[in-house]
Image (cartoon, rainbow, N blue to C red; front, side, top):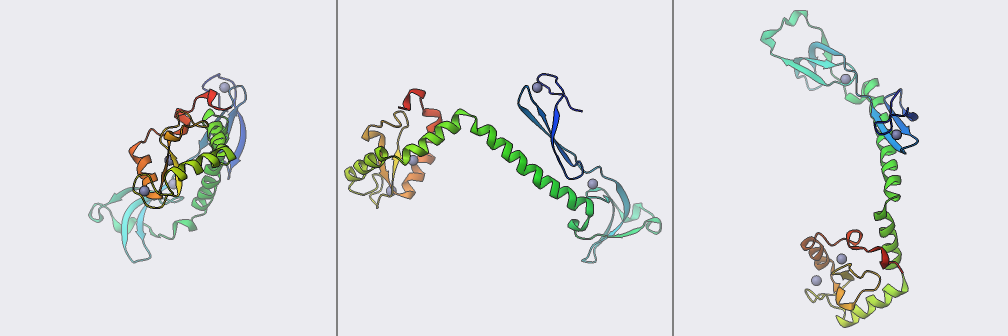
Length: 210
Ligand SMILES: [Zn+2]
Ligand SMILES: [Zn+2]
Ligand SMILES: [Zn+2]
Ligand SMILES: [Zn+2]
């Protein structure tokens, strides 16, 4: 049983992966999800390990996942007492195969949860609004005015312009034409790399949505 670190309530299991390789716990009152991935329990076997290439060395490896715990010098061990183990493809280990499958599913689930959480955030709402705005007739009109002003040329290098860039998002949604510039692909990425703070989410003011 797991307890929520925030409110100390018991958490409930929302999903198990593989044969208990990973468990997702959830605290209802906090709406908090706790991932719990169980690593290989490791059982190390000291032996002479032989690889397909013919190479061999003396070490202790986990019989479930092939993790190497320790490598020995041949002169420090009694070779006659050690078993010889052929090392195969890691994916042929039943434990390892199950573990990687569970790990994959588990990571996908975590990604899904992170995305859901992101969707509840302000940044997500602003992004969604912004993509909608870029699709609107108002933006199309403004974009045309900028292209006209620039005579279809990049306002940085004079090659053919392909898009309109926001020099600032201070007035996003009701931009002055001076806030905008026609650019080619190359100059657009230059503009953004020279001004890394240029970000619609951070410059957006809530009263901007009309
Ligand atoms: Zn809680
Ligand atoms: Zn292991
Ligand atoms: Zn350009
Ligand atoms: Zn831009």
